[in-house]
Length: 264
Image 1 (cartoon, rainbow, N blue to C red):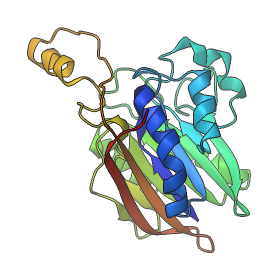
Image 2 (image 1 turned 180 degrees about the vertical axis):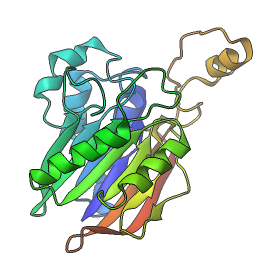
Image 3 (image 1 turned 90 degrees about the vertical axis):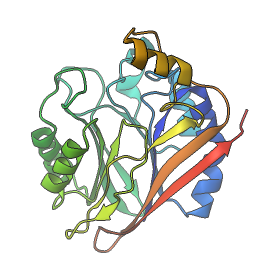
Image 4 (image 1 turned 30 degrees about the vertical axis):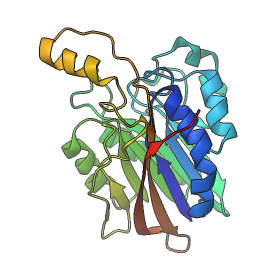
C-alpha cells in the first residue's frame, strides 16, 4: 500500500497547488491513501467548508489539523459531520470534532490519529504520549490493522520521543507544523516509518509560507504585525510511505519536493 502524506497546506495558493498537482502525483506513485494537513489552508490559519470540500473532491482521503484548528469559526458548522477531517485527539475531550478515523483501503482497516505537541505550542494539551496510546488501543479494538499518526508539534525531540514510544504499535508516524521538510526519514526496527516533518505546500518564495518582509520585520522589531500569506510561485512537499500489506510494515520512504510551480 502506498500512503502519500502532503505537508501543511498554506493559503489559497497552497490549496490550488494541491488541487492542480495531486492527480499527477497520485498516478506517478500509484497512491492508495492520501493524507493532507490543512490547518493553515484558509488565509494561513484554519480551514472552512469550501476548502474542505475542495480538497476532498480533488483526492484528499483524510485531512488533519493542528494548533490552528479553530482559526476560522466556520469550522464549528461542519466539523462534527466532516467524515474525512480530524483534529488533535489530545485536545480537551468535550471539544467539537474527532481525533481519530478508521478507513478501509485495499481490504485493510487503517486507523489514523491526529496529535498535537506540548513543547512551545502556546497552549496546554493533554499528554500526546498517553492519549496516543489510548487512541491506538481503541482503533485496534475496532479492527485497525495499520496505525498512522500525524504529530503536529514544534520540537524535534518531542516528535522523536513519541516515535520511539509508539514504534511497536504504529505503522507510520510523521510530523507536521514546522513547514520545512526534514532529511531524517527512517524505518525503525519494528517496521514503523518516520519523518520529523513533511514540509509545506504553498508559496515557495516565502518564510514558511508567509510574506518575507513581514516575517523579517516581526523578528527584528518584536512587534506582532499580522502575518500575510506570500504570493508568487508555489511548492509542494510530500512523503510516500510504501507499506507491505502482509506484514503491515513500512518497506520504503520517498520524499517528494516540487518547487517553482505556477498554478492559477
